[in-house]
Length: 356
Ligand code: GAL
Figure 1: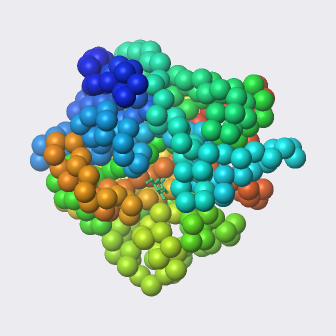
Figure 2: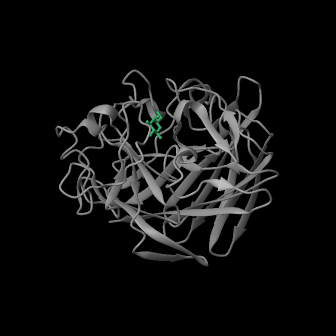
Figure 3: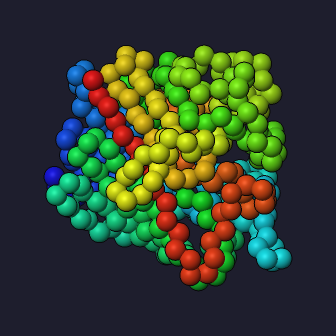
């Protein structure tokens, strides 16, 4: 019912990093003004409190590592092919930071910004309202962009992330959050025994640099089929070129958008349901976005240490990044990620826990 503010540390540029703690009905969210990052997410269960989102103990580790732990991603989440796209005949070239492609906003994405924070507690929720202004041509993207991200912790063990933005000229935008979930509280350092259901009958296959080919492919009868709940690891080693390219699941799924969820005057669609191996904790994700990147930490290095001295491990957690499809600006047939001058961008994703 309250928001507590604690000192977390300082960036290399000596900006003060604070952690805001939102607490309600058995859930505590710790959010940093650095990268609008979810640093922790404590959930009470019958087997004790579990911190189900990965992260680090210091600002330096957030600055030095490239895993985007818990971070807010922008301007454009995921990859843009060779960092090139055009708007109305004008070509743009972005900062390249992932092989030959641009990933998660470029060299200094929104995950590295210091956000301005306003706190607001209401009867049935606590809110953190975070803002930044990204200048025209930031990382190569056109338009001066004002972004507001609102984290809302509700009474029913759920939290939402509301994204709003406005640009002073036509641009492209695809905002998401990059939390790594492990519902055992990272007691088990692999996510393969978690059970996953996706409300997605199709996905977007990629080339060997993880850029979508443009195809929308049905999952039925393939290792990518999570329309019926199965463990993350059941088919992950199946012989499938798509799994080979990505080293496991790291693909955008097309959300079916058939099962509505009403949330505070918006309509969202069921997207994913994740359950811990011991069935004690489940997480349901709903969004109004068209896609979700399902990434099971194939690139996490074994040599990095997580919060609380826990070793990070390859495939120790799963990201469910609600988003537009990767490389949308280069695929006119994908749902549009253009934002017109003066248009109000607004999207919401809801994460709801059930603990037993
Ligand atoms: C994910 C992406 C992965 C990897 C990761 C960051 O969103 O799908 O391929 O780049 O971010 O390490």
